[in-house]
Image (cartoon, rainbow, N blue to C red; front, side):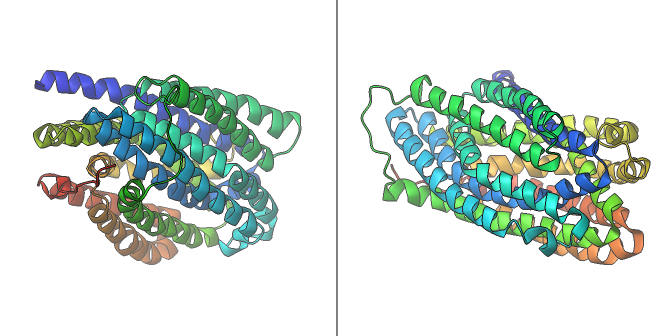
Length: 442
């Protein structure tokens, strides 16, 4: 393929993925903004649980990735029968693992807010929010796995439509449960869970019955996991689980560091993270495109094409996120004003967003390069990079800077961490060792 054709293909995959990320970000905005109208206390209860929901979601998403990467390689090699075998096993394994995490989440929900340093005034709402989230986790995880494997086959359009539809449903259900029925914070979790459940049903119907590459209609096959497929999945998922513990554990530690600063700082921190997501969501869309493009290229035994796709997606992500960072710096108060009516929360959140704007370029590099590495099955080295960035740089500096400078001190530490990690990923991706992994035959 010529460079122009590769750019065109990258955009064809990236644009739907970016739209899907936009819908995901909009769901965060919807929950945060609707709850934000109830006051600083309810806002803080949702913000306090954000890191814990990320941890649980990260484990289930990693399971899905272990199978979606195999689907991408097999589709790249033209072996669609084997890809459908992986699909069946991926759905079963995603359901089984997410059920365990869902039950664990429901079990720890009463005590979790207090473990994270939340006060008694927000503990009840925070606990109810997380309990409902955990109950819906298995349904959302299966839907995510179906969409991830559909993307691995090269179909970005349908998952994007489904994610955008889920966003619209979230608005409707949240309005009903938060305001019309007066459920407040628990209503936000219930509305989101029902939106995910309905979208999951449609996702499963499409991938099993309508997908050109992955439909199992008229084909006999077992849903029972086999050693080769599970071994491949564990080789990809294992380091990602370790990374999830490292990354999300650091986010929990960050919550503990920020929590003593009070409800205003907790709410400003949570809202600023949500506001920033508008800046980095194109990066995560390009990450998904990079995973598919690199995975299918290596499945077709074309390392040269895989390397070029990695570079195209990385620099495209860096350019887009740099532009958005400028807009974020300019309109930080307006972004925060969409999420909260509390002037103290808006002022503090805008201040930390402007600090973070200086990290977005290399943050983009780390996001998209990670997607390229995942497409190649290389997940251990990125895990080491993320450990060093999160625990050594971010948490180490935050422990020193936050007591002295408050919430801006924590965001200064985050900014430095993201720049260093971007440089590490840039160094790693320029070689070829990240493309050395071989998956066992299905």
